[in-house]
Image 1 (cartoon, one colour):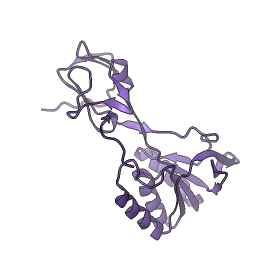
Image 2 (tube, rainbow, N blue to C red):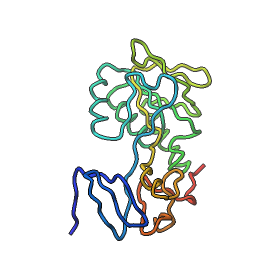
Image 3 (spheres, helix red, strand yellow):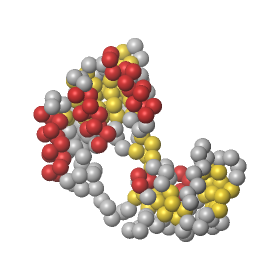
Image 4 (cartoon, rainbow, N blue to C red):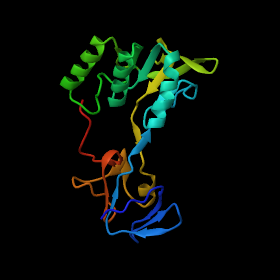
Length: 217
């Protein structure tokens, strides 16, 4: 008894009225609302971040666009050593590409895993030919004829590449809940039962944020 409305977007929330404004102009009432809107890829904000050859991986269209450029690229920089970055690096290394991962933190998977698991993944990738540079802060992207040719680091180093994949996290889709009055930090704030501070509204998945769940060191 689950109704699925395809091609329908929520465009406003009335927490007091327990109503959703939908993209077709209609209004839907609710008793309980579960917000599971996920997020979109966080973009680079450094100089040169808009040149061609920089890719983000969030949906199938992103991967299809990336695949069309792979044959022309032998050296690829992956920015970010989270799950997206490590999975991308492993796939590319398996295709015979020269891959270097740039991570701003002192270890891979620092935000989501303990040090032992980080060490395991780092050693596994290194053994397969992936170079990993830690504590690497990206300062800008260099281009030639409108396409990326190198990544410039804050310490002055220059990493040549014909392609870049960026996996630096997501921006949670919190805008509608924030406009409705929900408390938002790095996501919609929830308690241990996934309740927001709005009546009868819960948030789950990538969009939810619980203050007590601090990232491991």
